[in-house]
Image 1 (cartoon, one colour):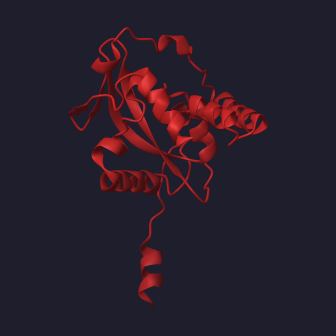
Image 2 (image 1 turned 180 degrees about the horizontal axis):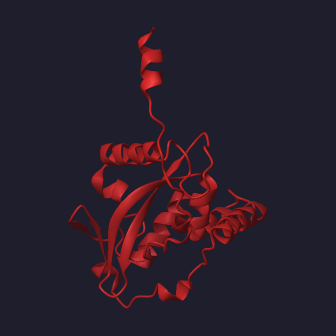
Length: 181
């Protein structure tokens, strides 16, 4: 018997539970846009964490359960809107559609720049809402995500280390986004 066949026979299936609630993750506070764990911790860290997340669901989207050709890593946070802290919790694997559903601001910018049609955006929104309905999950009111913390006082916390915003102001952030597009 070949080594490959032997290894395949020893393989135990991964048992995991879908977690549709990731679709209602709050948006990252704007001051921390671009200050992602993958940026501050480096590519090697990100590759390792993202692969572990994919393996944990046997390469399925954690929200909709499909097994796409390509999975994206989504960072989850506990956000303290009063203290201005976003603490990294974990990375989960998502298909492109579920990931876009969470990042609706990004999706709108894709439509505005012509990289996505309005029909595609509506399709992503309807699909995400259907997944939430089927799971019995209601979307929270986004107005609860308000903060009086000054831009420069926000911090991203990863593995106990604090990182300041990547951009100095909302204008700097917008300028960087325009230059990328």
